[in-house]
Length: 281
Image (cartoon, rainbow, N blue to C red; front, side):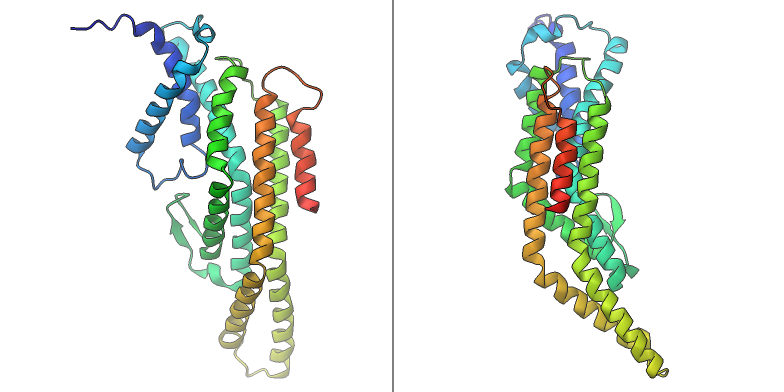
């Protein structure tokens, strides 16, 4: 029977690598979806860790103790790196879904929320539609590959236990979150403006004709005008989402690079500047 002694020294390092990759399966586009069974996620994380571990410099794991109680806090810290990358990647998609929620509420489409298996929550039908469209843009632009690249590249920049959730991470997240809110407003404003004009016009009409039923007349007109405005603005929405996703991928890549040696410009300041540029672009 073959002995396991040659493998045992690699167990602590492998668990650390597995923890960092597992963070992507907690919060990230696509791979963290509730539609993927947990067993499949576990097997996928295990397979990716097996493929990544041999490529890492083994000297980084020389000081790890083969003790579960000592490894537990270290693995939690490693998990935070993958979670941070996944959450940052989700910010533009959340922004687009928020825009759909805004439009759905103004158009009257949010009266019957539906369950979204991708996010495991109830959401507006229009918000879910825009989220799927933004997700397709994210996939076509190589967002999934960029997530893996950021996490794998972080092994060469941040050793086990060296990561800290400092001010740079907070400022990067705030910058991307601000850009996501600006994206939501840019995407939803044309439809919301049309709905506002329709509401004012129907208000004047109902004052002139008190017997007119607003529920039977106003809502169909609002929905039709809102859908027409949304259809007419799909090209602009695609351009805005594409630009925001590209900026997010670049910002997260720069943030991961900043986890290593200090440079003149931090990723946090770049995120704030890029967030402002996306908002006013």
